[in-house]
Image (cartoon, rainbow, N blue to C red; front, top):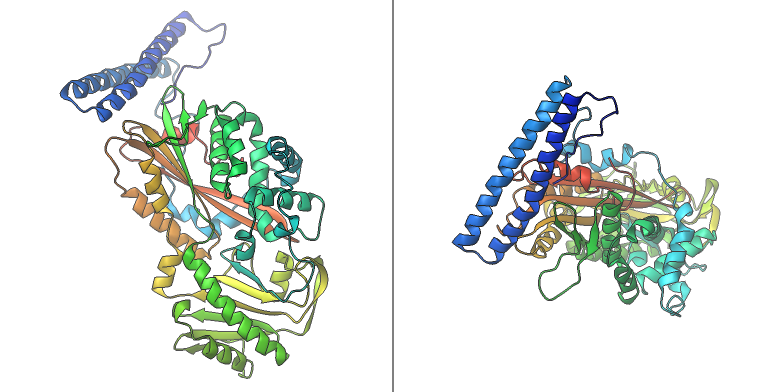
Length: 539
């Protein structure tokens, strides 16, 4: 609960107004003193239910409500005295929750504001932060080539699923060490910089550096930073640090909670209205999406080998009406190769398992400007792949050039883009991370008020992404949890990382804010707690 303390008065304010404002201030102090007692008695009752504890809690709640009524009357008196209507605030309050039409993927991307910061400005500080805290020899303990694109054409295709290159996302090595090397390569304009991995890792590291100063005021932050080096996948810890930093930047008095065998949230806010904060972060790709990509990889390798032998280059567009686990690779390969012989190969032909279209490309395709191999510019010019708003679930492609090279023309381009439109596949692909929300609730101790932050990467095509958002909002709206805890609001942080232009890292962030309808006047939370975690721009 935030304070509604009156604004300072000018020196020439009349005495009658000073009396009214002093009454407002006094009643605010009375109300502020009661809320911590309500919270304390709530914890006592939830952990030791008895008629005595219940009576004490109910009595304190009655006192707090009476104090709130007296405070509201004092505020109304001041507004009336100066001729203002308290029902018409000078600045509109933020919305309670978010209407779905305002959060569709297409709208989020197309209406995204211009960049408010450039990672280049923060990356030297980010490197300094990590290098300063890293144990001796830690940064040099793995070969840097683990985290780089290859300078030789080893015949491996580039595969992009839900905006993520799987071999970059799940590469060997420590993810923080990888982020450091990506940052070094990016700043050095090294052609081996993995622009697929950098879009997420670099922007995340830059924001961590941007929050470094306020993190200094968060108790326990140094121990959390030290833990980054001992965990093979530190993304969840980085998310906790970013949430803590964003809360501190909002003026919240934060500390990390020491983990224990009992339920323990990640953070505690020590302001007048005490609140615990639990953070969860999901993996970029689900196991289902990884398995789907593996099937399409087998299809592409078979198809590319035969097409190359025939000098048949271009883009195969495959829409499946069955799940990829039911695909006969030999049958689909043969059908794709025959599509070139159709009178209009670019027009999709239907089959029992889906449809195929083929867009022929010359064996040499000149680009409008030199660019990095497999950059967003190249992928769009050659294969029509929209990095920001893809129409397909994935793209697998290959050109006769090393991934770490600069090209002004593309030779032997071949690709397959696909989407699966079965109801079951859409359901599996659009599953919302509500299970993480449920796990977060179990970390809130009995008697506590808690906020939940859930982060996930959103790279699906628009209909999949929008279905995921709808499902999440519907399920969370009806979620039931232990009556001994209070969760006034939840924040679902959607991250849209993507390389842009020649491979520069970029990210759009959009947070769905859910307010518990059972909490009176809870919309103040959206003013006092952050929505922007991976970026610094609040709505």
